[in-house]
Image (cartoon, rainbow, N blue to C red):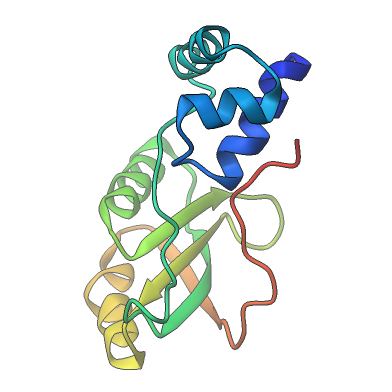
Amino acid sequence: MIEEQDSRILAHLQKDGRATNQQLADEVGMSTSACWRRVRALEEAGIILGYAALVARERAGFAMSAVLHVSLERHDAKFVDEFVSRVTKRREVLECFATTGDADYHLRVVVQDMAAYNKFLDEFMFRIPGIRYVRSNVILKEIKTGVALPF
């Protein structure tokens, strides 16, 4: 379980990952040295995985986004390992989840346009051995997106 002070630190860092240690310490009501030690401990524990900029997908040229539902023919290690290995190397695949239900995996993919999406399917997805089907849901409008955990 995460302590209250750590929750406050994490909540603030999720809102402003560029805050200085002094700003963070002031925000969470700690001394700068204690705050720095707690942040370092959260990093070393693997709770803070890194720091990144949030980028506006469409403004950056990635006009198309889709959720793919993927089912494998068989679930033996050979096909699963091959699928996971290939998918994790593709930059277009932002997220991949092993799921219950009709599909074995759900992927969130971003590309520049429909032509790029078709190329992604034809030259990549449809060539992975062991895939039974790939179903696409093109995202028409993003209603809510986020990465911050609810501290």
